[in-house]
Amino acid sequence: MERIQHAVVFYDVNCQYTKKLWHQLKDNRFILLPSAIELVPAIGAWHIHGHRQECLAHYSANFIPGVGRIDSEIMETLWASLNIILPSA
Image (tube, rainbow, N blue to C red; front, side):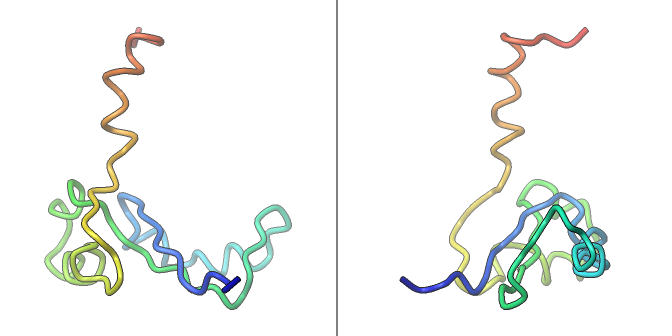
């Protein structure tokens, strides 16, 4: 079985979050990632348009090789259903 070489990670503010991510993970004893894996940062389709133009070209899934069509907004789509279980105060 082949090892995973790349992992696309979606987060609403990845343009800022990933600036020091490897530095933070390097000395973290609770999160261990293989050094050979490349984390490819991306921003979801809904949030990317609130960023600067250069973020769109760099972090949009539409421009990352090997990434299919995805909006990466699964949590937001679940909120309406989850409100039935745990309504806001």
